[in-house]
Amino acid sequence: MRFGLFGTGPWAHLTHAPALAAHPDAEFVGVWGRNPDKAAEVAGLFGTRAYADQDELIAGVDAVAIALPPDVQAPLALRAARAGRHLLLDKPVAFTNEDAAAIVAAVTERNLASLVFFTRRLMPQLSGFLAEAAATGGWTEARVDHVGSIFTDDNPFGASPWRKESGGLWDVGPHALALVLAVLGPATEVTGMAGPRDTTHLLVRHAGGTISDLTLSLDAPLAAEREDAVFVGAAGVLPVPQIPWSPTEAYGRAIDQIIAAAAGGPPIELDVRFGAEVTAILVAAREAIVSGRTVAINPAR
Image (cartoon, rainbow, N blue to C red):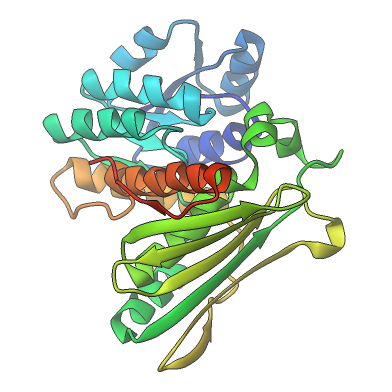
């Protein structure tokens, strides 16, 4: 499958480009970036071509891989889908339900393969654990702490303007939601509060009545950093296992799934419909925090 990469930031350098270049069944056709010099740099590092025009790259590939901020990704993903290209997107897929719904509609109308890159969900150790936890059932609560500190001199992601503006809710919130939704099912309503140092606290009610409690931040004190998750219920207290951080391996599995689905293989669980479901929760959470109310979730489908 021929892939075009859109984006030249740290995530593209560290994950997207090396995984595309190394995959035996992917042809890394080229890269486009908002900064032509960075696009040329990525192209030189990974033996591909830098494109100056988005549409030219879209026209020359079967699938697009996007490593751009959500507000830049959404219109580009929609343009690619309308051109009949499969989508390998980053999370969140968009900042609004309307943008997410448009992408879902374009993918559905053209029967395209799509995947949203929820990194650790692509690792078999975690996907197997979550499947077993969902089958066990009887959960009364879930708790996820996804609390980091990226605004330091040695962290390349700290220079990202969209992360500074949107914070942990939109950056690590999708990862936390991808965990709890897999076990507790769809969310129906959410309430939340914002605390100091970009700390967001959410309570999410799921369709079966269980409530998940999420604590999210990108700007916590270094001593407060943590990434923990646990499900609690009739089966006891079940911590989510710590698994190796291997984003290029996870991205290789994402490429596998896109290629297989495009050839008529099994449907992809983490597709744009799931991505739109996550966006709907984040949109409702943002409203809940501002208004001080519990907000019903209306997924874009």
